[in-house]
Length: 301
Image 1 (cartoon, rainbow, N blue to C red):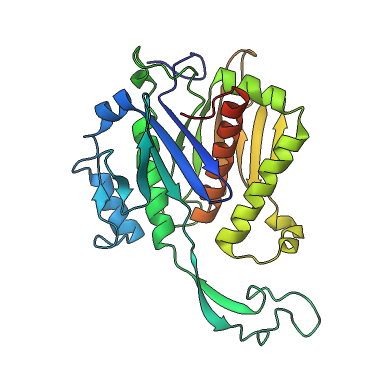
Image 2 (tube, rainbow, N blue to C red):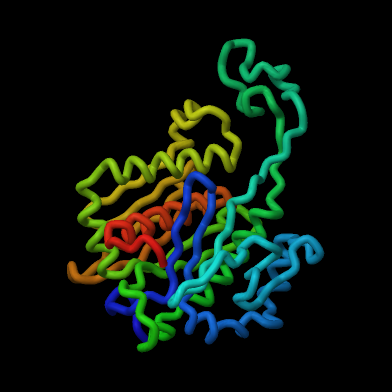
């Protein structure tokens, strides 16, 4: 079995993220989609997700094949295809429901001492509805599971670039239940080493992730991110990537055990407690892959 950490393999799957529309774009190589299209039919993991995440069967019927939709409901929908790839997209859902004026601050957005009210967002009380976010995270989990098999990249269609990364995710409705990890390929790591010298690229990605998290979690103004627990960072050190999102040291970080420079590495996560954190981290990986393809001169897949 081939591993992208050590082997250069023609890409069979890549995903990017479009910040202005909060949309993931997934590209699945056609021959791989055909091989994997039946694997989830009658799979017990589908019923497991329904039971543990309470994903409504009527609102979100499951689509096991790479047709008009994939996964639960319309979380991931087909957007087109090219000579080499099937193109799917998924818009990040809203997770908040406004419930009226905050009773703690009387709708003012600040307390009597002038400090910002931490019970609301600018005077508006709200509650979280995770159903659609659960459906998206579960759908992406299953997609990543089908794609996380290096042997799929046997000689066949070649898109002109190597597999950049592989991702696995955890989706459990509990604290620490949204961890993720994976591997980066050698050429992608080599690119990370180069882009490290261009702080403007990293700054733009960090800004995009900050805005995504703010809009997703409805944190209000960006000044809220001045609190240490609510910062978003993208750091690269000698090619080793760390992405940090708001939370208790919530991040993905590199395994720094590379035995030589011309190879990739694994990455892991820490304290990823809810879908908002996982989605933001995946968006970061998508933005980096999109920038890699752009630097390679690949505009359309």
